[in-house]
Amino acid sequence: MAANSLNIKPRVVEELATWPTEVDVRVVTEKPERLQQTFIAWQLPASFTAAGPIHELPHPFELAWVHRDLMQAALATGQYTAFIYLEDDMRLTWDSLISWATDQAVLEPLGFQRQFYRTEIAPWDGKQWLFDALQHVHLATYERKLDVGVQTRAHQHYIQLPEPYSAVFVASPTLLARFIKSPFWSKRNGPWPSREMASNGIMFVDPPPGFWSAAVVPYEPQLQQLSRDAAIAHMSNKHCGKRSHDQGFHDQPPPVEPSDVKFCVVELDKFFTSDTTHKHKQYWA
Image 1 (cartoon, rainbow, N blue to C red):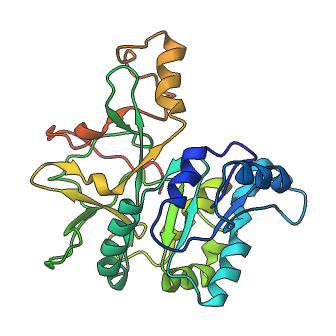
Image 2 (image 1 turned 180 degrees about the vertical axis):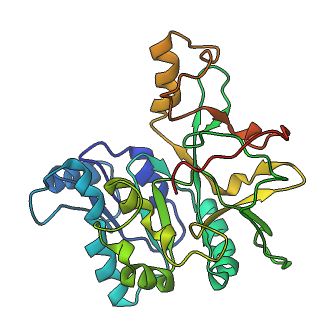
């Protein structure tokens, strides 16, 4: 798990402490001694520890890469069944992890990776809005979909989001080993900026034909909805709130979207559109 300095949210680590399994949490920070004292004050288990970079970082965003050495060392022990990168204001529940594991068991042999999407609560309507989505999707004409066609507890239908960044990844030992051997383990490679590659570069490892990354999330075609099992709450809720505050709107949506808005522009329940003239854009690829 990666943390930005001392800004980690108590709810984030407290959530991990409730999981009914053994969890080793390493929170990466530039001031590990101070954060360790905070963990003691929060009465967290001894398996929750703070870790710092070995050398002085040239830029705060470099903190996002420190987990690489920690994960590689942990993989070498053979003691872990899952490896999680999580930014300091993301809430990952036990139910979300179980859903990931169930889906990943079906997807990984097919070359896909089960991903997540981030949500925030909009002050103007109290509903969940997609943090990263910049557009709607017309399901019938959108090409990057997957039907696994098997009857298991896993979801059967998946979609590759046009804007798939989520600031979190979960990997099985096999997938992490492939990631380590890939060019995307290094900060020198990848189509995205450094911090984004640190947290989601794993999705570019061996994408299946017809897909530009391996990342997919489940959806419900009958309901025309993304599955809530893949949702992760962005606990700071700072971007939906910032849009309202900056424009003077607190109980109603901001006006027509300005061209520079990058977050909270698509309501979760309205992600799929019935507009047959809608044209999809690829911002990240």
